[in-house]
Length: 218
Length: 188
Image 1 (tube, chains in turn green, brown):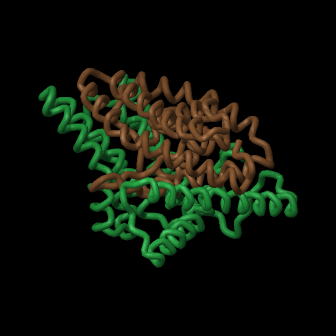
Image 2 (spheres, rainbow over the protein chains, first blue to last red; image 1 turned 90 degrees about the horizontal axis):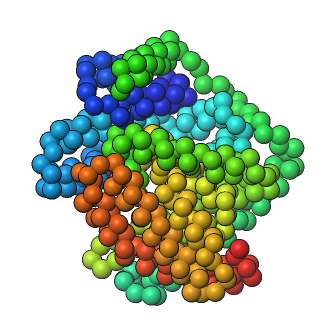
């Protein structure tokens, strides 16, 4: 499925569900459609782990509401709202590889500066993760033990400082590359993400739900 | 510090999204070719920093680094924060789409205070890091508290949970600035 269409569907779906106070079976139709279309691409275990991880803060939140207010209606509402959006989002992001998301971002119809920021940031994530891992690995090799003391904080600060310095060097190299290639705000890729009937179907479903909820005052 | 979709009151979320839009649009409008790679890569660093864990007693906490982001980027820290939070949502599902503006505003408020506070001294660097998290925690607690009485306790808990991080961020920011001053001569 086309990631940009899914992202647009997600925006409509999130705004439809996030402020709703009563739910009907209609609200789960987009999830059902998406589930059917992306079931083969998703690892079930990974999906469950992500879902549980994203529910940690929610659990803390509902426990507080339960302990201090015994407000079961709010607890139910928060749980349904949050999890419907999380499930939709996880079905979107876990059914796509990183390179597919990157390729789709290039074709997003948004102002070029935001797109450039998104693309450059995205591109350098893995690079910085490996830089960070290398630096932390160096600490391990040198038998550094993390403790709650100033030396540890100073060491971590130096690692982050080194990362910032490298980021600036890479930014300078990137800027030189943009000038050399006469960058004019346009991005090109070899392949364009295809759009299928499924994408339109899901987008229409989320737009209908969004409009319906808007007309009924959420 | 990420608030997910579906928790907060519609007025708080939409209000914060609108308030966040103004400096974001201004920053994007003012962003030059020269500043674009720097902002993008600092955004990546902000993203990666949230995976660096710092020991605190028997547990560990992850850094936010909006203070150092504010010192280095100034107004453009909002663009960097916005992009980093959007990518965190797109890659890991952290935070939310409806609350993206609100989460950005919470972090950006702290970053701008840090930018204003930093005057080149060690103590101002510590205060920048400390106050950046302090202000962000206040904004986070306010977002929760304004969403209804049922969130008051969570708002207090969220604020006090950030207290150790404020001190650690202050110390770490001070050392980062010291490190970068040795390399660059002047951070800001």
